[in-house]
Image 1 (cartoon, rainbow, N blue to C red):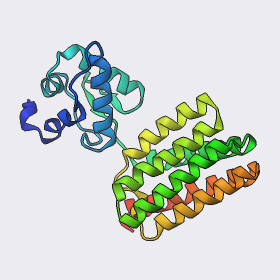
Image 2: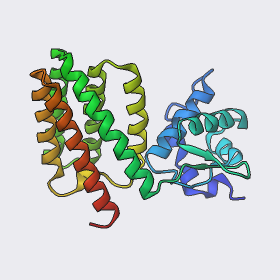
Image 3: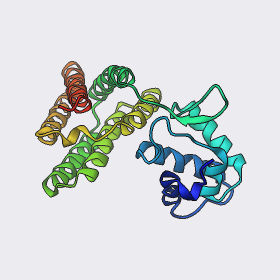
Length: 234
Protein backbone atom coordinates (compact mmCIF):
# COMPACT_ATOMS: atom_id res chain seq x y z
CA UNK A 1 0.00 0.00 0.00
CA UNK A 2 1.27 3.47 -0.91
CA UNK A 3 2.30 5.61 2.02
CA UNK A 4 0.21 8.80 2.28
CA UNK A 5 3.34 10.94 2.22
CA UNK A 6 4.26 9.48 -1.17
CA UNK A 7 0.87 10.12 -2.79
CA UNK A 8 0.69 13.59 -4.43
CA UNK A 9 -3.07 13.83 -3.95
CA UNK A 10 -2.87 12.91 -0.28
CA UNK A 11 -0.04 15.38 0.29
CA UNK A 12 -2.34 18.18 -0.85
CA UNK A 13 -5.09 17.37 1.64
CA UNK A 14 -3.62 19.38 4.51
CA UNK A 15 -4.28 22.63 2.62
CA UNK A 16 -7.99 21.95 3.09
CA UNK A 17 -7.47 22.21 6.85
CA UNK A 18 -5.75 25.62 7.01
CA UNK A 19 -6.68 26.11 10.65
CA UNK A 20 -6.25 22.48 11.59
CA UNK A 21 -8.99 20.16 12.80
CA UNK A 22 -11.62 22.05 14.78
CA UNK A 23 -11.74 20.88 18.38
CA UNK A 24 -14.80 18.76 19.02
CA UNK A 25 -15.66 18.78 15.32
CA UNK A 26 -13.10 16.38 13.88
CA UNK A 27 -15.53 14.42 11.70
CA UNK A 28 -17.08 17.60 10.29
CA UNK A 29 -13.64 19.08 9.58
CA UNK A 30 -12.46 15.94 7.77
CA UNK A 31 -15.73 15.65 5.83
CA UNK A 32 -15.52 19.26 4.66
CA UNK A 33 -11.85 18.93 3.72
CA UNK A 34 -12.37 15.74 1.73
CA UNK A 35 -15.46 17.16 0.04
CA UNK A 36 -13.54 20.23 -1.15
CA UNK A 37 -10.62 18.07 -2.31
CA UNK A 38 -13.02 15.97 -4.39
CA UNK A 39 -14.86 18.99 -5.77
CA UNK A 40 -11.56 20.69 -6.68
CA UNK A 41 -10.40 17.56 -8.49
CA UNK A 42 -7.47 16.94 -6.16
CA UNK A 43 -9.03 13.53 -5.48
CA UNK A 44 -9.94 12.36 -8.98
CA UNK A 45 -12.97 10.23 -9.95
CA UNK A 46 -12.39 6.54 -9.11
CA UNK A 47 -9.38 7.37 -6.88
CA UNK A 48 -9.09 5.20 -3.78
CA UNK A 49 -10.00 6.77 -0.45
CA UNK A 50 -8.12 4.60 2.03
CA UNK A 51 -8.92 5.15 5.68
CA UNK A 52 -5.40 4.60 7.00
CA UNK A 53 -3.74 6.85 4.43
CA UNK A 54 -6.33 9.59 4.91
CA UNK A 55 -5.95 9.38 8.67
CA UNK A 56 -2.18 9.75 8.28
CA UNK A 57 -2.57 12.67 5.87
CA UNK A 58 -4.92 14.53 8.22
CA UNK A 59 -3.09 13.40 11.37
CA UNK A 60 -6.26 12.02 12.96
CA UNK A 61 -7.53 8.57 13.94
CA UNK A 62 -9.39 6.36 11.46
CA UNK A 63 -12.76 6.79 13.20
CA UNK A 64 -13.59 10.33 11.95
CA UNK A 65 -12.24 9.39 8.50
CA UNK A 66 -14.57 6.38 8.37
CA UNK A 67 -17.56 8.55 9.30
CA UNK A 68 -16.52 11.23 6.79
CA UNK A 69 -16.41 8.63 4.02
CA UNK A 70 -19.87 7.42 5.01
CA UNK A 71 -21.23 10.97 4.80
CA UNK A 72 -19.59 11.55 1.42
CA UNK A 73 -21.11 8.30 0.16
CA UNK A 74 -24.53 9.56 1.29
CA UNK A 75 -23.87 12.74 -0.74
CA UNK A 76 -22.96 10.71 -3.81
CA UNK A 77 -19.34 11.89 -3.83
CA UNK A 78 -17.89 8.54 -2.79
CA UNK A 79 -18.81 4.94 -3.50
CA UNK A 80 -18.20 1.86 -1.40
CA UNK A 81 -17.01 -0.97 -3.64
CA UNK A 82 -17.81 -4.67 -3.44
CA UNK A 83 -14.58 -5.41 -1.57
CA UNK A 84 -15.52 -2.81 1.06
CA UNK A 85 -13.06 -0.18 -0.12
CA UNK A 86 -14.16 3.36 -0.98
CA UNK A 87 -13.43 5.34 -4.13
CA UNK A 88 -14.28 8.82 -5.35
CA UNK A 89 -17.52 8.48 -7.30
CA UNK A 90 -16.74 8.02 -11.02
CA UNK A 91 -18.18 10.30 -13.70
CA UNK A 92 -19.26 8.99 -17.09
CA UNK A 93 -20.67 10.91 -20.05
CA UNK A 94 -24.06 9.41 -19.19
CA UNK A 95 -23.74 10.78 -15.64
CA UNK A 96 -22.96 14.25 -16.99
CA UNK A 97 -25.89 14.22 -19.43
CA UNK A 98 -28.21 13.05 -16.64
CA UNK A 99 -26.88 15.81 -14.39
CA UNK A 100 -27.72 18.52 -16.90
CA UNK A 101 -31.23 17.15 -17.45
CA UNK A 102 -31.87 17.53 -13.74
CA UNK A 103 -30.12 20.89 -13.56
CA UNK A 104 -32.11 22.36 -16.45
CA UNK A 105 -35.39 21.47 -14.78
CA UNK A 106 -34.39 22.58 -11.29
CA UNK A 107 -32.84 25.87 -12.45
CA UNK A 108 -35.97 26.55 -14.51
CA UNK A 109 -38.16 25.96 -11.47
CA UNK A 110 -35.89 28.17 -9.38
CA UNK A 111 -36.25 31.10 -11.77
CA UNK A 112 -40.02 30.60 -11.97
CA UNK A 113 -40.38 30.64 -8.18
CA UNK A 114 -38.11 33.68 -7.83
CA UNK A 115 -40.23 35.54 -10.41
CA UNK A 116 -43.46 34.56 -8.69
CA UNK A 117 -42.30 36.37 -5.56
CA UNK A 118 -39.80 39.01 -6.73
CA UNK A 119 -37.69 40.37 -3.93
CA UNK A 120 -35.85 43.65 -4.53
CA UNK A 121 -33.08 42.67 -2.15
CA UNK A 122 -32.46 39.44 -4.09
CA UNK A 123 -32.65 41.29 -7.41
CA UNK A 124 -30.13 43.83 -6.15
CA UNK A 125 -27.87 41.02 -4.98
CA UNK A 126 -28.04 39.28 -8.36
CA UNK A 127 -27.13 42.49 -10.16
CA UNK A 128 -24.28 43.20 -7.73
CA UNK A 129 -22.87 39.71 -8.31
CA UNK A 130 -23.26 40.30 -12.05
CA UNK A 131 -21.03 43.37 -11.75
CA UNK A 132 -18.45 41.34 -9.83
CA UNK A 133 -18.55 38.78 -12.61
CA UNK A 134 -17.94 41.43 -15.25
CA UNK A 135 -14.99 42.78 -13.26
CA UNK A 136 -13.49 39.29 -12.97
CA UNK A 137 -14.03 38.79 -16.71
CA UNK A 138 -12.27 42.06 -17.47
CA UNK A 139 -9.38 40.95 -15.25
CA UNK A 140 -9.23 37.54 -16.94
CA UNK A 141 -9.57 35.80 -13.57
CA UNK A 142 -11.18 32.51 -14.54
CA UNK A 143 -11.01 30.89 -11.10
CA UNK A 144 -12.81 33.86 -9.56
CA UNK A 145 -15.33 33.85 -12.42
CA UNK A 146 -16.31 30.27 -11.63
CA UNK A 147 -16.78 31.08 -7.96
CA UNK A 148 -18.83 34.22 -8.69
CA UNK A 149 -20.96 32.27 -11.15
CA UNK A 150 -21.74 29.78 -8.38
CA UNK A 151 -22.54 32.69 -6.05
CA UNK A 152 -25.03 34.05 -8.60
CA UNK A 153 -26.88 30.76 -8.93
CA UNK A 154 -26.83 30.31 -5.16
CA UNK A 155 -28.42 33.75 -4.68
CA UNK A 156 -31.07 32.88 -7.27
CA UNK A 157 -32.08 29.66 -5.54
CA UNK A 158 -32.14 31.37 -2.15
CA UNK A 159 -34.47 33.92 -3.75
CA UNK A 160 -36.80 31.10 -4.75
CA UNK A 161 -37.45 30.47 -1.06
CA UNK A 162 -37.78 26.68 -1.29
CA UNK A 163 -35.69 24.68 1.18
CA UNK A 164 -35.88 21.41 -0.76
CA UNK A 165 -34.96 23.05 -4.04
CA UNK A 166 -32.03 24.75 -2.34
CA UNK A 167 -30.83 21.40 -0.99
CA UNK A 168 -31.17 19.56 -4.31
CA UNK A 169 -29.41 22.29 -6.27
CA UNK A 170 -26.65 22.34 -3.67
CA UNK A 171 -26.00 18.69 -4.56
CA UNK A 172 -26.13 19.53 -8.26
CA UNK A 173 -23.58 22.32 -7.69
CA UNK A 174 -21.24 19.83 -6.05
CA UNK A 175 -21.57 17.49 -9.02
CA UNK A 176 -20.89 20.28 -11.53
CA UNK A 177 -17.77 21.38 -9.66
CA UNK A 178 -16.31 17.91 -10.22
CA UNK A 179 -16.48 18.23 -14.00
CA UNK A 180 -13.21 18.90 -15.83
CA UNK A 181 -12.49 22.51 -16.76
CA UNK A 182 -15.22 25.15 -16.80
CA UNK A 183 -17.64 26.04 -19.56
CA UNK A 184 -16.71 29.68 -18.89
CA UNK A 185 -13.39 28.99 -20.60
CA UNK A 186 -15.20 28.40 -23.90
CA UNK A 187 -14.66 31.32 -26.32
CA UNK A 188 -17.37 33.94 -25.92
CA UNK A 189 -19.16 32.09 -23.13
CA UNK A 190 -18.42 34.62 -20.40
CA UNK A 191 -20.17 37.41 -22.29
CA UNK A 192 -23.08 35.06 -23.01
CA UNK A 193 -23.44 34.11 -19.36
CA UNK A 194 -23.41 37.71 -18.13
CA UNK A 195 -26.07 38.64 -20.70
CA UNK A 196 -28.18 35.56 -19.94
CA UNK A 197 -28.05 36.27 -16.20
CA UNK A 198 -29.24 39.85 -16.72
CA UNK A 199 -32.09 38.70 -18.96
CA UNK A 200 -33.24 36.38 -16.18
CA UNK A 201 -33.05 39.19 -13.63
CA UNK A 202 -35.18 41.42 -15.87
CA UNK A 203 -37.84 38.70 -16.16
CA UNK A 204 -37.78 38.06 -12.40
CA UNK A 205 -38.10 41.76 -11.65
CA UNK A 206 -41.10 41.93 -14.02
CA UNK A 207 -42.73 38.96 -12.25
CA UNK A 208 -42.68 37.13 -15.59
CA UNK A 209 -42.37 33.60 -14.27
CA UNK A 210 -42.85 31.89 -17.64
CA UNK A 211 -40.09 33.90 -19.33
CA UNK A 212 -37.76 33.54 -16.34
CA UNK A 213 -38.15 29.75 -16.45
CA UNK A 214 -37.67 29.61 -20.23
CA UNK A 215 -34.50 31.70 -20.01
CA UNK A 216 -33.08 29.63 -17.15
CA UNK A 217 -33.69 26.40 -19.04
CA UNK A 218 -32.06 27.82 -22.19
CA UNK A 219 -29.11 28.97 -20.05
CA UNK A 220 -28.58 25.41 -18.80
CA UNK A 221 -29.06 23.84 -22.24
CA UNK A 222 -26.34 26.11 -23.61
CA UNK A 223 -24.06 25.13 -20.73
CA UNK A 224 -24.74 21.46 -21.53
CA UNK A 225 -23.92 21.96 -25.22
CA UNK A 226 -20.60 23.56 -24.34
CA UNK A 227 -19.83 20.93 -21.72
CA UNK A 228 -20.33 18.15 -24.25
CA UNK A 229 -18.20 20.01 -26.81
CA UNK A 230 -15.42 20.39 -24.23
CA UNK A 231 -15.55 16.71 -23.29
CA UNK A 232 -15.43 15.68 -26.94
CA UNK A 233 -12.48 17.98 -27.56
CA UNK A 234 -14.43 20.66 -29.39
